[in-house]
Image 1 (cartoon, helix red, strand yellow):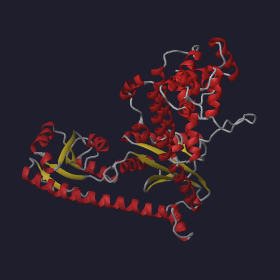
Image 2 (cartoon, rainbow, N blue to C red):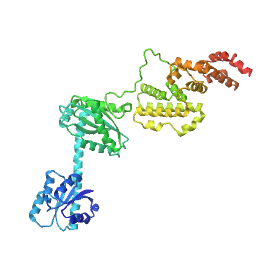
Image 3 (tube, rainbow, N blue to C red):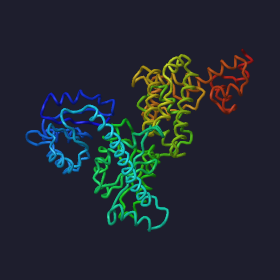
Image 4 (cartoon, rainbow, N blue to C red):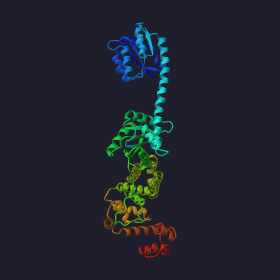
Length: 513
């Protein structure tokens, strides 16, 4: 709709004009009225109408003086003049101000409608021309920036682009933005963001550009430090979140001159490619790598049998919730070290979640109903744009499972260990691994176990295994099958353990039954 402002010092005429014409049928809407030229000038600056219908004679500032002020401000506004006098001198003055029509009071409805139809076509052509010109300016500027930031040949196009863009002799820095969740081909929000940023940005401080898939800013003064990057982030975030968008941003570092701007662009693009591994809520710079595995302590001997996935399972089963985030973090860092790839990491984390659930269900059949009502966070994980979110989603889910399985707190660790042995006797359980889960010194946990249970950890584990072995032998299973079933991979070792605790070999025991 074309906005209209009606200006006349007679209230009845103002309201009569408002109701005389079915404005919307002709593509117009009356956004306001004014009783004087001064009031009209104030309302023009606020309402920005494209058409003003103004009385030629008003107290204070008359209609012609109003039009004169508008033209001094280079206001892009069409004007129809109203007059109760067939005064040729007024008509000549009005024409000199490039008005669009001169109507005598009382206004003839058909004559006014005829003017409105002509003006509607004129304004439409002007808007199309203005849009084309603006787009052409943007296209030309973006083309020059492409020569500068993505040069195909050496020096010549780059140097010419720097001069035409007014960047010659300037140090600069490229900041790139990448939007999340845009509907490709049908989402105008990126253009809306660009338009608003261009309105806020001073051309002498930076240039806004689009080089798909990025929206970018070529800063004429590089960001100096973290405080500068934080301030820019807040400014960008205030605009972009207003359109319901999320985004990543990266700064490519200072370039000594425009001829080095392409390096800053490439560095910023590289950081955005690694944004999954970066931090949230900041403009990325330097390196995104916060996921390196910590170096082991010099005196620490690596344990080849130490399995973080098994430790995670033990932590869940024993209710050691404080250990779960740390263990998930270790798993994530191992995956990053193996392959720095978003899909690989997500797939393997969900594999670990699934296998952990399967092992818990096998030992706890009643656990099935909880899992059915609390499915794994597969949708959240695959939809996450940051590894830090993925890590938290998996850790939170594992803690949720652990809380469901355990109601006890710190102080009943030995009971939880003995319960664990009853369920996991066939696995490679070690006191050292459990000590890490409970955050105890291994020797201290061993003394606690001996004092409460009356036997050493390994002895208790062996006895549980042998009791289970007796049950399997009574079911007619072969000796080597029983050995594997209860956690002994070597049949001879199983035979020795069985004879130690039962007094006869497994074969002899089965014959006696």
